[in-house]
Amino acid sequence: MRQKAVRMSRYWLFKSEPDAYSFERLHDERVTPWSGVRNVVAKNNMLEMKLGDLGFFYHSSIAQPAAVGIVRVVRTAYPDFTAFERGGEYYDPRSTPDKPKWMMVDVEYVEPLAHPVTLARMRAEPRLLGMSLLKRGQRLSVQPVTPHEWKIVLELSKQSE
Image (cartoon, rainbow, N blue to C red; front, side):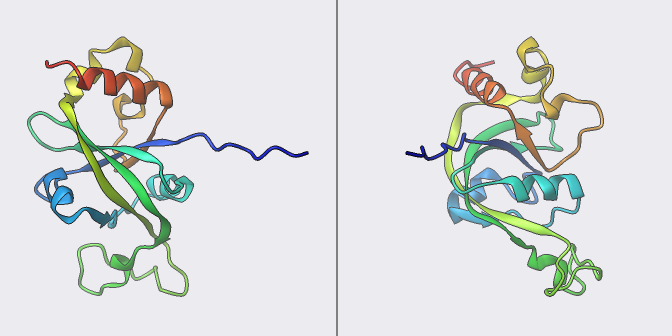
């Protein structure tokens, strides 16, 4: 008798500047396509995502960058239509509906973190030294988070700074 393989949950971090798309806006809209990603590594991360994967919603490019909430993948990778919109901010003439170059996933609002976990707080946590977000030059808008890192950030969110 064969046993069914159990897929381990994957975790992610989704970065957005709050003036471009905020966690509060996702709360209001409930679900959004994570579009406009124009980095091959970030695109490949989205191609690895499965339904139900969880991620931190991270506000970047602000005075206190921080993980502020949790999202869930509710639609796996599909062509990013913003690449086809001539004159649009994310238009890419190399990407066509027949041969899409860029992908996106849909994420839904799950819940806010008890307390935002700032970048400074993560950097101060020795157990997070290997986290992708903390590596020099790591500017990906979509990046993996290990199960160990996920648990630590959740633990930190339960403590006020």
